[in-house]
Image (cartoon, rainbow, N blue to C red):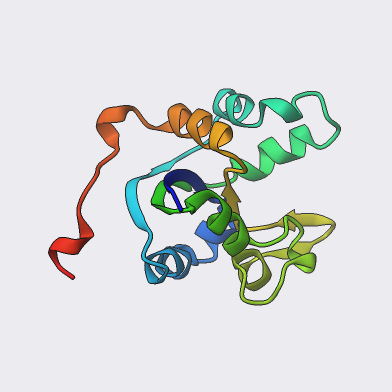
Length: 150
């Protein structure tokens, strides 16, 4: 098992509905470390950078509208197999198809044909590196030894 870093975004529905603390707690209970964290407001330029593979698709404009409706929490999570474990913790993209106990299964919902799925999680090492680089400079990421207090 390798120690990895991955990016998560707590999306507007998680922020607006007050679920940030609950979601952060799930990662901390799995002994993952938060090595970078900030609130940001998505602009169209940031969204196009992040969601570049979706530019031109029919849902792109509604995605931009959704992701920019409130600030979002951007965080870098570090730990063993962080990418695959984070994806599993997040659950299936569609909240109604996510297992109970997953973040999307517990906090996501569908309203008026809009899908609110609470969290984004990088899907690969390459995506994690690219996405982390969009939001964080190296000086904004920290390392610390949790064994000092355990």
